[in-house]
Amino acid sequence: MTKPKRKKHNNTQSDVSDVSGVLESELLIRIEALEEKVEECARQNTQRILDELERVRGQVHSLNLENETLRKELKELREERAILVEEVCQANQTAKLALKQTNNLEQYARKNNIRISGLRDSESETEEKTKRSVCKLISEKLGVASFDSNSIDIAHRLGKYGQNRDRAVIVRFNTHSAAKRVLGCRRALKGTNVYMTEDLTKINANRLQKVRDLETVALAWTRGGEIFAKDHNGVVTKINNDEDIHQVNTRLGRSNQGTWMRGRGGDNIASVRPKTYTNPSLSKNGDTRESNTGSSEAGSAGSASARRAT
Image (cartoon, rainbow, N blue to C red; front, side):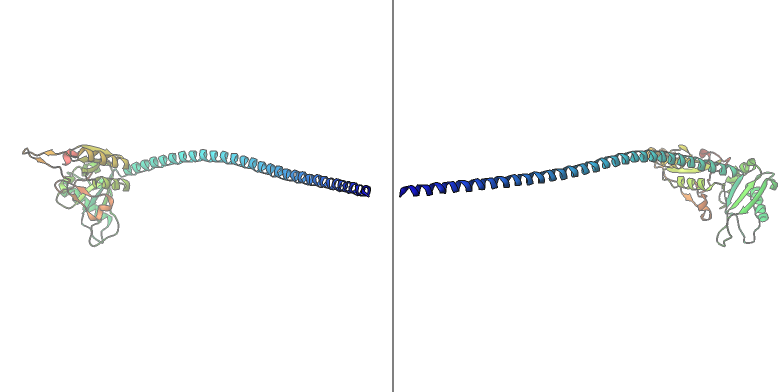
């Protein structure tokens, strides 16, 4: 009876072994399949990463090329900008020089001219009548001996007639010596409210007014179209351009700080700015005059020096 039981037990073990083998085989097959899938996914992902990396490398290379191109263009633009800046500076210098030369030529062309303000005006006045009035002024008021009216080329008023103002007169002489001679006698007009000055260009007239507006300048005048300034210590400076005005103001401002002038009686008196006398009809043309005594003291060709003027 016991022998059949042993045979059944042996069969069970054999079945278990077969099932185990089958399961192991299937497991191995699945593992191999899974490994193949993993390897395939890894290969695909690796290839995808490599492709993406290559694409990024291409973009980086393109950006590097573009960056290098931009650097070259920027360098060229900077060089062009430097050239343009230099050209602009040269053009500005050329323009300044041309403006200076033009102003000098224009002033030189006016060397035979004088400007008269305060001369009685009328609405019906003609150039011939203006010329006679000027000749009368020169002969009677200035006392110029043997003055020849033929030495005047033309005399005319400036602007339109106005009832409440006397227009300025421009007198052009045939020779510079005649204009110089007349200007040299203008001191005789003191107290007559008639003023006689050089005929300045607009640039020089504005420049002269700027100099006269400086608190550090005691007196400003012109001679031969050139502008001069004298401070309260008697130092005379020639003004050639607008930069000189700033330099003169700064330099004279420092030199006048704490300075005093000795009076005749030994008293220390502070240096003061002289009064300014302005002809309203000519203020725009630079005909403001300054004098310590209230007399006409404008710049002129052939006029006395600053020391004589004060």
